[in-house]
Amino acid sequence: MATHTITVFGGTGFLGRAIVRELVEAGHRVRVAARHPVRPGWVEAGDAVELVRADIRDAEDTAAALDGASGVVNAVSLYVESRDVRFRDIHVDAAGQLARLAQVAGVEHLIHVSGIGADPRSRSAYVRARAAGEAAVIEAFARATILRPSVLFGPGDAFLGALARLARLPVIPLFGRGETRLQPVHVVDVARAVDRLLGSHPPHQRLFELGGLEVLRYREILGQVLAHLECERPLVPVPFLLWHALALLAAPLPNPPLTRDQVFLMAQDNVASADLGGFATLDILPRSLRDSLPACLAHLETGTP
Ligand SMILES: NC(=O)c1ccc[n+]([C@@H]2O[C@H](COP(=O)([O-])OP(=O)(O)OC[C@H]3O[C@@H](n4cnc5c(N)ncnc54)[C@H](OP(=O)(O)O)[C@@H]3O)[C@@H](O)[C@H]2O)c1
Image (cartoon, rainbow, N blue to C red; front, side):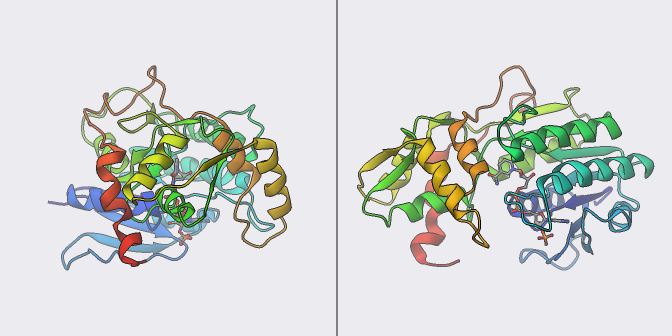
């Protein structure tokens, strides 16, 4: 029986969709808050899913989306800045405002999704904003839980999808020598973590880093994808300086295929710390990337979107 209303900001995004589904299946009433909310295709009559149009930057929208909620998840993203919206607007100012409004509204649980590597001293504006956002959230809502996932994968993801598309090239350029260590995590495992954290006996930790079953170098992940696609390609090291130059050249484009922040991210290991909360704390065994590849890449092989 549905007992609590949980508002999921960004509930139409890649992670948000998985969280909404997990929470509905666990018996929560879920309010999906986004600028363009869409009812998920799997929703059946009787499922407790409500849609709310809300821009997280707007205080009135945000307060309305929180009305009567006992929990809130912030899974709003901004990966590329534009003239109209900067990293600070979404990841710091709006996240802090949501936390303040949640505190005023008497919301019990606030889960703020950030990312591994959040660092106020980073050269990347994106990574600095993630760190400042975490601080703004904690300042306004001291009991908030911060979730930092590593790179997400799952059916229809951006990560494996992009790697699979590289297989169309005759040679595949690597970021540096492809040695960066990542810990790709299945989107459903992160959604399960959110469900656990909203349960009646959440762990005392407030900061979680969620990495998948294996730590893999970028070139190993690419190798697994190519092997799954039964495709052999030479992997060519490309210095990060050259990637930065390419990102600078691409910057004026309306939808740049690569940004300097993405290059910075690809230069930095993205592995969960053993000293913080993690899947083990939540009693969740995350899935393996290799085992999940067929399901994750099936839509590309069949040509479905
Ligand atoms: N994907 C990854 O590999 C990854 C890895 C680590 C951490 N994360 C973090 O996980 C979170 C979710 O990422 P994601 O990849 O699932 O994002 P996503 O697929 O790009 O989805 C973004 C969501 O945010 C909503 N949104 C964007 N701007 C908004 C605004 N101004 N007001 C309200 N809603 C807004 C979007 O809906 P509308 O456009 O309709 O508003 C959408 O629902 C982010 O914090 C991200 O940094 C992701």
